[in-house]
Length: 116
Image (tube, rainbow, N blue to C red; front, side, top):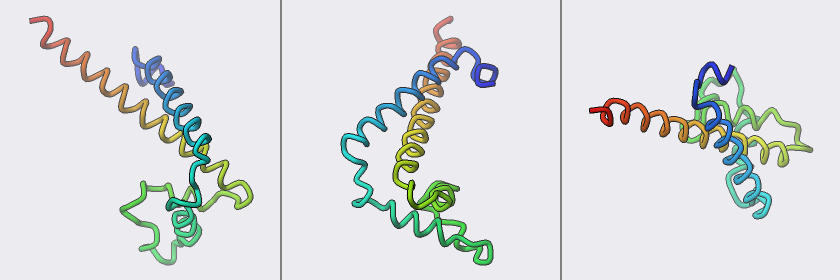
């Protein structure tokens, strides 16, 4: 399916996804992710206290949509390793998306301006 959606750019997407994920996970593992020093526990508390009875608790403009809900659903005993993996995968997805968009845009504009 990814090949059908991205066409010729699926190999670069997969490459940058793997690159972004592995670099983020390697650096995070080396730094031990500093989970006690960042806002992770606030997001966990926020995610665990989201309720449909209070619709205002479902929206927070600071966090990406669904991130706090996803973190809040994790089992507490494995929360840090799962969060490390999810954050690395999301970073890899962001890196791959932006890189593929840049390659597509460069080739798109070059197609119209380089053939003149």
